Length: 115
Length: 112
Image (cartoon, rainbow over all chains, first blue to last red; front, top):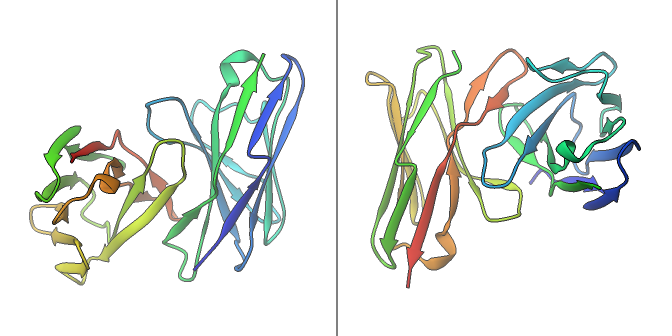
């Protein structure tokens, strides 16, 4: 099956610093990957669609200058939370499509805590 | 359209009973219907999916039925076990990149 990894799994940082999260498709090539954010006991909120070789498409209300997405290769997308603040503390999950593109496989998530 | 309604929001059953979760969608052009299970603190996992040219699909204790006329599809779990306890989502596909929009989900609790 399609396997997606994320790194790091946990990160604690000080307010004002930037944090980079990596999302890798291990056994398939992902032209498109997706980034979600999930607060405790809430659903997954789609933040942006990450397109290989082009700019990401952000959902309404998501600040593109704060959440920088780079999709440099068919197996790697990165999300950088710039100038992180405590309200950015959340569970960040990426996903990628397998064969056929419709089915999405999720990474294990990255738990971010901003102090 | 991005409008999926999921019912119930919470469901509590005894071990061994069946559980049914229903999703209603609005976009008649939708043709792919996945169900994801998310255990506490973990990633969502695809448990079953169905395409619009099929009315029912079964995988061991899990089945999904699709009613295109009424625009709803349901997840059926038989002989529930405590490890089935999780939040279940029926996200709607949207847009040209096959992005998924998640609703509130259904929190299933299976009591021993």
